[in-house]
Each structure stands twice: as C-alpha cells, then as structure tokens.
Length: 109
Length: 109
DNA sequence: TTTAAATATTTAAATGTTTCGATGTATTAT
DNA sequence: ATAATACATCGAAACATTTAAATATTTAAA
Image 1 (cartoon, rainbow over the protein chains, first blue to last red):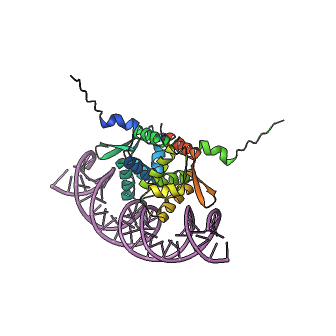
Image 2: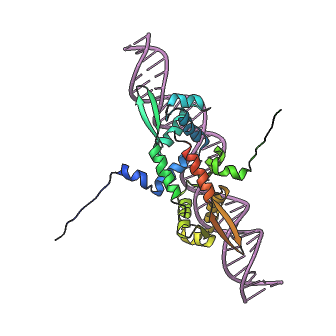
Image 3: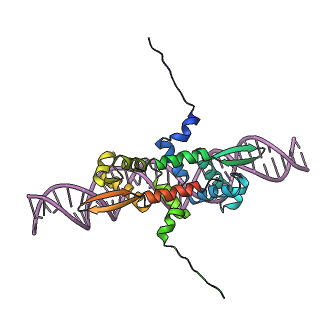
C-alpha cells in the first residue's frame, strides 16, 4: 500500500530560484544595448516606474525605436507594462532581475 | 591654515564597485549567446578552469567558431586566458562577474 | 628541421539587430 | 463625429553577429 503525492509549483514560484538558459540568454541580450541600459537606469530615479513618453523624451531616438527597445525589455520580462488610458507605464521587474542575478551567481564555484 | 588630502584609487580597486555602461553592455552581449552560456556553466564542474580543447570537444561547433566565442568572453574579461605550451587554459574571472552583478543590483531601487 | 597539434585569423554567406519614415490603432478631447 | 495624442507595427536600409571552410601561426615532438 502506497501513499502518493504530487507536488507542483506555479511558474512564478520558480522564477526566484531557477532560470533556464533560453531565458538567461534573452535577458542578457535585452541588457546588451546602450539605450536599453540607459532606460533601466532611469527607473532608480523614478521609484521603479516610468512612462513611455518620459523615456522617449530622454533618449535621442525616434518613437518607433524607443518602442522597439521597450518591447525587448518587456519580452525579457525586465519591465512590466501597465496601460493607463492612452499612456503606458512601465514597472521594473525586480523579481526577474533577482532571478537573473541568481543565474550569474550560480556560475561561480 | 588648511590641511589638504588627495585620495586616489587604482582602477583595479574600482572594478569591484563600479562598472561603466560600455563595459556593462559588452558583458551582457558576451552573455547573450547559448554556446557562451554553456561554456561558462562548465567552469563550475571544473573548479573554475577549463582548457580550450575541452570546450571545443563539448560544443557541437567547429574550432574557429569556438575560438570566436572564447574571444568574446575574454574581451569582456569574463575569462582570463593562460597559455600553457601550445594549450590554452581559461580561468573564470569572478571579480568581473561580481562587478557585473553589482551593476545589476544598482538598477534596483 | 621537418612534422604534428593546438589555437588564431581571414573570408564569405547567412542571419539578426538597430534605426527611421510611413502608417495603423486605440483612446481621449473637442 | 472629428481631431489630436500616445503608442505599435511594417518595410527597408545600414550594420553587427554567427558560422564554417581555408589558411596562418605558434609550440612541441620526432
């Protein structure tokens, strides 16, 4: 006679602990551009959230280019987009940043 | 009457603490490739140092491709090359990895 | 000193990225 | 309804990256 348990976790739970190589690669690529690094650095000065229009003003790029860069960051889950009427607010996803840092620390012996 | 002090630091000292955006971008780009991530992950299993030939054997790529990838990692200072006769040993540069992690943590509020 | 082994460089093809102008789509204001 | 605003998408040009074949360089062995 056996007692069987199946324990499953929501993907959100694992996000803290593990990160597969595909994801790690995607985040690294999102971080490998000067404009996108500049964008991410602005969040610190703005309590973790920024509006799309603020970002477009601050970069010397056209609106479609900025849109492209923000898409890279959102697709990598580094930014969470929140629609507010016709404006778009982005929030820095510190959980994903932590998971990425975790992946980097895991490289060390 | 004044007492004046000038305190300067060697660049190596700052390596731990700060990392400019150019360098951050370069490291991110070095980390944004599946083959290079696989290479870095092997260092953990080999006490932080690996031979070029071991890396070529383990990846399903030609020798020139592996050489190219290793160059990216060395140029980003993630790997330190050490010549041993006609072989080449690579050592994982944990200091640079830590400086990079530092830069990531600095993005958080 | 010729030969073999390990790694680097060059060249070229295929593919991916960045950028902008033009245009499309929502949403708010008039 | 129409116009204006905010953002996204498409298409194309410029540029960068990845890969492998061919070749070069460096070092050790015979």
